[in-house]
Length: 108
Image (cartoon, rainbow, N blue to C red; front, side, top):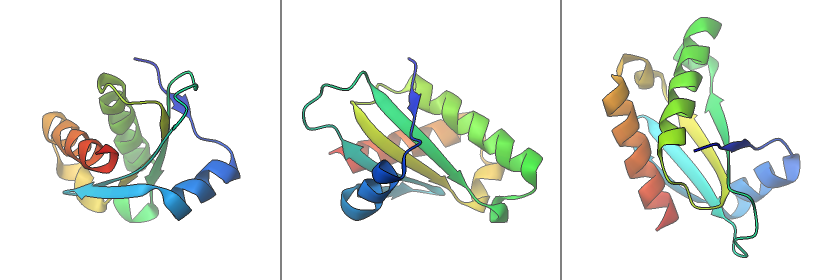
């Protein structure tokens, strides 16, 4: 499933202000569901800070999170997925499980 990107500051501020946040292991998801359900789909942003590692490692974590997010059936809305340094050591199935659990908690 294709996912869009969150690019505008208004959406980031809305996520910070009124998004619901949930955590599973080293993955934190902040979700702001689209109440009208009129958007084309889910838009996702990834926050992978310098504490995770050098740029090559951060990009690898971001790519793995993006691939795991594509496999989920995300309801329409905006999502911010944050990764802690421990995500580097997770296998892909573990990362996928943590993301699934965090999304489920944040959207329920």
